[in-house]
Length: 402
Image 1 (tube, rainbow, N blue to C red):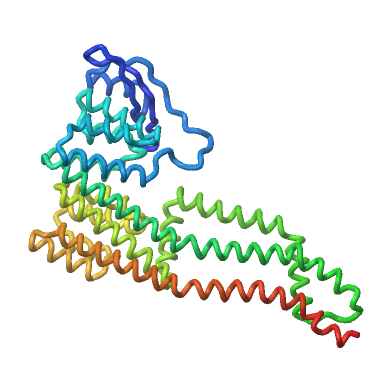
Image 2 (cartoon, rainbow, N blue to C red; image 1 turned 30 degrees about the vertical axis):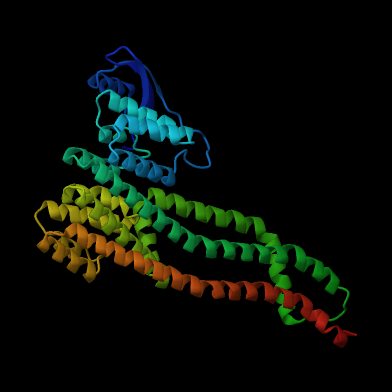
């Protein structure tokens, strides 16, 4: 869905005279009416969907959608008719949003649309890759196989995303807590000790004076620092989302970092290989598959490179030659793609590449966890321990004062 498209709730009457409703995306209500008439539906009420001003999360997350794909794949493989399978999945779902979504999909299919066409009317939940795979399965008569592949792909992507999120969230959270505790000590505890030290009548140790000076400076500039930090973070987040040049610069900077760079690079390669293997194995043409695969990489730099690779393929180059020319894909990926293209087993070679990089990610995450836990303990120990020592150092020297 392009940025100018909008979601609309509609009601209409089908050829049997039954009242049906659904949700579709278009640039205007007039286009919604045209779409409905093409499907044999007489349009009635059409209203734009206004998103809430604030919500904690989307009504349907990736886990719910992957469960839907797995359930639908199982039912279709068991020989259950598609409309009946959608009914079973909707009835077994405890999520009202999922039931409404499946109801809209079922209404579109009952009106004569294919499953892929019905899914494309809900781009918030089903991206181009998902819809292209389902479309290829319907055209080849192997929908149950493709649905199982899509479900497996979604589950693997969810697992990879969860591992990466866990690896990055834990150290950041612990460090934030450590800095928060240190700020609390500087703002609340150190001033109390300062008033106590004022009655000693002797010069305080240099380290204690420095900590007291830092406490006074932080107390005088705390709100300025907080507002500045929040503004910088907000500006970076906004720039990452809306400024492609800044997004690419930040990604290039992150890829140069020692361990994090390897982790992000391996994750992008694993997503690329796994997604392209599934798409190509399902019968989607290579040039057509590379567009959605680029967006599934989760890395703007690799996404840009894959769009260029797609253009090279359209002009007649082989995949391995186009990947080598981009400069972002390792020799292992290029060589295995060349072998797969020569032997006619490209999907299998891509699956092997994905497995290799997924194992590399697991190894990197284990190494990162083993290294970062003692490092965090050391940093927090130095922060909090230095403050405690600075406050108790004058007390240890109280005998000299007396």
